[in-house]
Image (cartoon, rainbow, N blue to C red):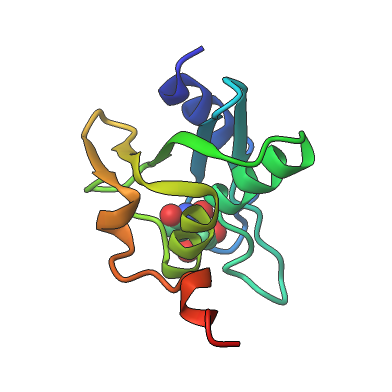
Length: 130
Ligand code: THU
């Protein structure tokens, strides 16, 4: 199954009673395995957990640690872009050159790199003097 198909399928499982905005994410780890996530909201924190964060959690739980490629899809007018927190989470587990493809359910897509999404990312090297 392609990452686009996997992200499209898992999006249907999104739990979004507050925003009604379903998001699906699928990533291929460097092992070759595909991990998926959808957004899951709750009444106390209506923004809930993003689809990308869900896919990353599934990757870690499965024993993979590095992202080779990631897709995200939503029913939005323009390709949905990961929120700030998810950009940092993706950057934790992906090289700056890794491709991030953002899609709409009606077929628009845009591919950027992790470095494009989070230029000047905070990194371990910033703590070199500690
Ligand atoms: N959301 C994601 O899951 N991924 C994104 O890249 C952007 C936003 C979710 C969080 C929340 O459930 C809903 O979309 C609206 O913020």
